[in-house]
Amino acid sequence: MENKKRIMSGMRPTGKLHLGHYLGVIKNWVNLQDEYECYFSIADWHALTTKYNQTQDMKQNVQDVLLDWLCSGIDPEKSTIYLQSLVPQTASLHIYLSMITPQNWVERDPTLKDLAKIMNQERENMSNLPYGLFGYPVLMTADILTFNAHLVPVGIDQVAHVELSRDIVRRFNNIYGVEYFIEPQPKLTKVPLLKGLDGNKMGKSFNNDIKISDTAEITQKKIMSGITDRNRIRKDDKGNPDNCEVIFDYWKIFGTEEEVNEICECCKCATIGCADCKRKLAAKINEQMAPLREKRQELENNEKLVKEILYEGSKKAQIKAQEVLDGAVEVIKMYK
Ligand code: TRP
Ligand code: SF4
Image (cartoon, rainbow, N blue to C red; front, side):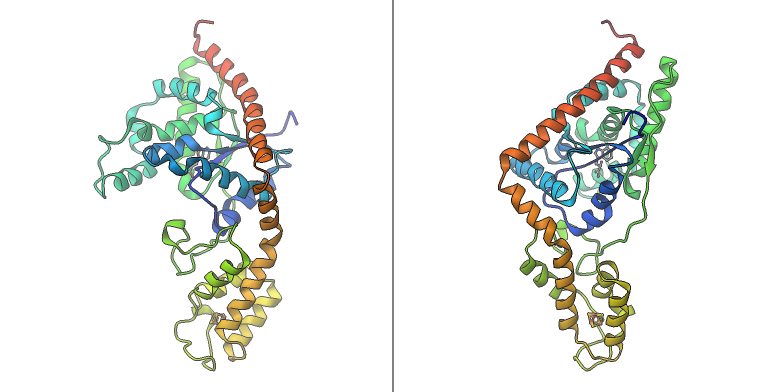
């Protein structure tokens, strides 16, 4: 336990997670749990940076993310699963880091620029951003440094944030003259990219996703709406799987090599119709998701246990967080 490297990552609670999250992020986390000391944060303060006036769904969203993680195999016996706002040490650390971070380092952040555009209806204007949103890259640094983590498994879109964290760490260590914080490294893993059913990026706001928590019926219905080879109009038209952007792509992700080859052959000589092909695919996905969905349902019926898991995890997180914070406070030479 002691000599394992530490991993920290997080997700904003924005609602029920989809299969893109599952395949792209969560499965990867699940695989890291044995080799590393893992801290996984439901980043509710991060959600508040943009949704401060839409908090009516916050509690439900936190619970949904937690259920999705747990049913997917994030294991509270192995990893520390916590709620960001239940670990106030991160807020203390954020204050200290905010003192040493130049404003223009934050302004450079590409994700922040995008957020600013959304908040300002496409005008890139940083000056009217809420103070909290502006400081969000520093808050993310505080998340990572709360556990003095070595590695941060993130998607490519978050790498710039980890780079900023490294810059802040170097500055901190330099200013206070001790190699106190570890420079965190982004940990990228190659994962299959799951498109949305309409061929665009999968996202809940586009209404083109399949949720971990969807029923088999809903999953099937959604799959039936997926894009196929647009040139294949009638069932006896020969198809071309290479032009079947979504459904054949899904086959490659959810099917075995043998199944993929068979679908490919049958499509090319029109011995399978698209409706049948989709029904088969839906059955395949449902079969793989069934155990998770069952577990999710079980947990959902046991609200007390689920809450306890989050509180226990947050308590555990606080212990490591306090240790790291105490060290930082000492390094900064605060009165004690
Ligand atoms: N900022 C990340 C996102 O929007 C979520 C996140 C919050 C995070 N804190 C983190 C990721 C710490 C890695 C480490 O997706
Ligand atoms: Fe796509 Fe399947 Fe239709 Fe072929 S049969 S075009 S692979 S949905």
